[in-house]
Length: 177
Image (cartoon, rainbow, N blue to C red; front, top):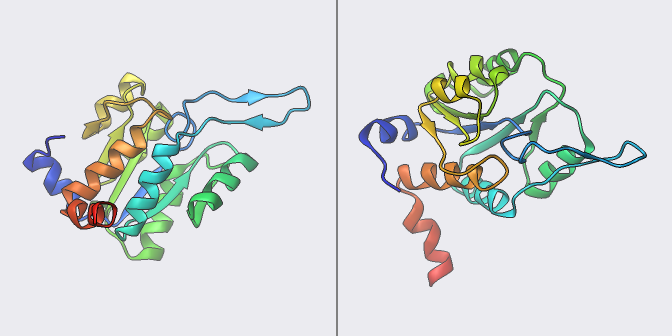
């Protein structure tokens, strides 16, 4: 993947990746059984990409408007320590995170897919929309993935950040030595 000068400038300072869940980490489908138990579909490559990114020192936070035990289980499985559910105003949580972690907007990337994500897409240093995001979210993004939400889009973003920060070769050395 080609990293333009503009992308390089946006990626270089990143220290935090914030992700929406439904439609970004999942393909947006919600399966409910007759007891009301919910299932979601996550991509294993997205999960590995997040683990690689965290290994490179980039923190990961999830912010979602829905609440689901599935999200808690997946976050714990991947080692994502901070996730916020039932959030109607993602900007409020974002600003609290910036203050608590001492970060600037330039140090934060966000991946979204729908109109509720636009206010946050407009505030971060690196705004990403998944390929199947609504048009308004795509227009607010600096980068649009080639892959769909829940189908490798997050892995694409993780790889892009790792490569853009010049950490790819060192990270891959453990797999090829």
